[in-house]
Image (cartoon, rainbow, N blue to C red; front, side, top):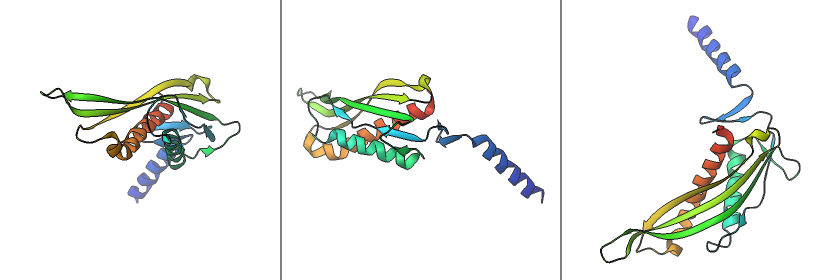
Length: 167
């Protein structure tokens, strides 16, 4: 009997504690935020697949739809996300004794502008980047289909944590 009362008290305390915000692995969004607009990601860099902006844009929309209760809108959003791909670079890494790169590195850089219309103090502009190395005996064409999703997923996660994490 005491166990049931204690269990219900803990559940009630947790409910009261979590009321008023959404929680995601240490991050939270204000319960006042109801809508989000994610503008098309622009390409402002040479190189990269022609559909890279669309790929990042769709992954970003999918992430917010899957992990929040925010509704996508095109009119007067509470949260506006705009992005520009500013870097898609392939650089040699880990030189070997015969002056060849032992690894190549693909880096994706995306600049985001986030406008929170309910709390201007949470507005920001920041560049997010991530890279993956791959063996020099593979071409970029061979690895792009595997690396681009990894790069964009990490950038989107970092962006979400910045928006929801208050850091």
